[in-house]
Image (cartoon, rainbow, N blue to C red; front, top):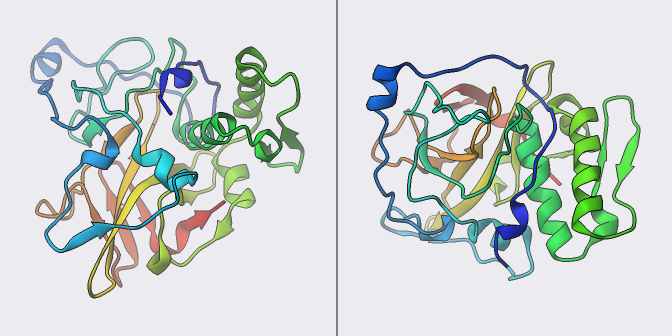
Length: 255
């Protein structure tokens, strides 16, 4: 199941809009080195951990197949490098288009919808806006219609509505496909891309985000633990510190 079908444009979402252009000096310092990993599933694990078993038809399995770019620079929708090039471990090989559209909640909804679309589970492609209006994908089931549907969803839904739609989940049971989300105007959302576990039952996870302005979806580094990075450990800490946002562990939700 390739990611060629992911090359579509998206519409506005969770966070606000702002400008973010790198200076010439900052551009010259951007790390364009090959990450060495072809897909999320290739990101190495800390010693003693194994990835959670998932069915090959599950969202978790699909996310692990997500391709990664060789160049780990995060680019904005306008082709400019993002000013902050220190938040990402790797960049997903997914087009963002040329408009300021694909932001945080958009990226989460896009990946979920693409998974369901590729598995022909069309009736499950459904999102609800903050006012309670439900947007369900309807025939004809083709790429053009699907893209039009996504434009409508992303223009009407964001972190506030997605947080309402998702179900609360205990961080101790985190799985790929879960979402760390704070609903708001703006809020923020990050998708759990992978989870591993050790013999003692301790879990670690990878996070991916888009942000504002619209930019490449990227795997986050762990700024609080260089040794574990890019993995995050489930712990008793109240907060989960990511490079550009701090979540509370009670803000984990699932589909």
